[in-house]
Length: 136
Image 1 (cartoon, rainbow, N blue to C red):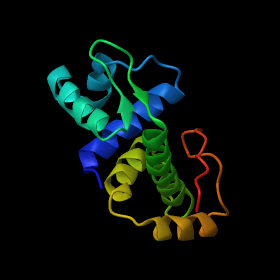
Image 2 (cartoon, rainbow, N blue to C red; image 1 turned 90 degrees about the vertical axis):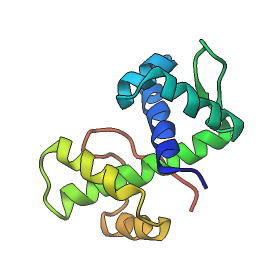
Image 3 (cartoon, rainbow, N blue to C red; image 1 turned 180 degrees about the vertical axis):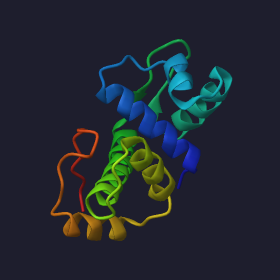
């Protein structure tokens, strides 16, 4: 099990890669609003856990293990966003995102699967991003 902060880094790397960016330390720092030194420290931890391929001053890439975990985290986040919009009536996309960030770390996979069923297995989140398919 990894920390909430480590999960946020994996999600960040996934999203940046999804958007076609070459993921580097400085881009992660900018995205997460932390210092480059903080990013380097976390990237080293993620690399030791074989979740990313990382060499200083090079592009950061998710390993197969890291990608699988990142997809599960993004899946949870985007399903929660759909729930907030479709069931609870949230309209502001920024609020939807922030609430999903707060909730995603505290929900079980079973809970998200139940939300999927209620929501008729959405394929796209409120921001128009594809919801990853995960093995259940």
